[in-house]
Image (cartoon, rainbow, N blue to C red; front, side, top):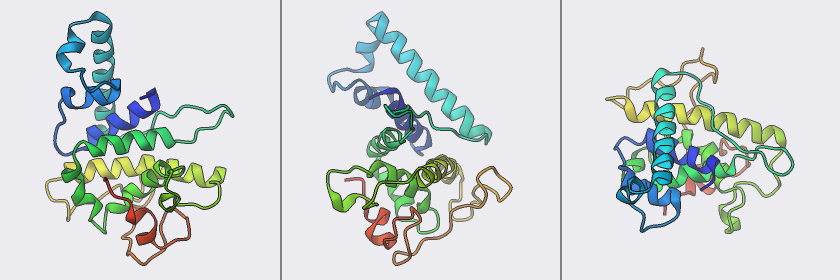
Length: 209
């Protein structure tokens, strides 16, 4: 993973309602299934890496706990633009470590829309054309809106999993930097990602398989 993917990945782990241990997620970051936490702690350079990952995860948690505005760490491409695809894909990789825990949010019509901007950017260039939310290239304005929605969605998701009673929870208030919480999305309504497709045929069909 690059730094942007790691940020998205660790953000998903921070939002997850169940703690994921380092020996479960470090191999995904490092890219070697044989590496465990013990292997990291046995080598100084890997100890430094482990420490940086832990510190960054803690910083994400502090931001979300405090209610401050969350800002994803995005890298510029060769054109000096910030696509956000790597971050969204990193987040989805984090979700994949605990599919059952995320199922409740995916099936929640009131709050599942928080994931829509993340899914839209994660699948923008999907090899399966049917999984792509847009037929045409995303405009700069739409991309900016998706990235803002992605950041706001993280705040919604964190609150969703942290509150004792999910159904009675109140998400980000209207006075927050991101305005109103995402509305309930019907399966036959237009997808809020702006693709023009019905939700059930766009971001609503994306699963964690």
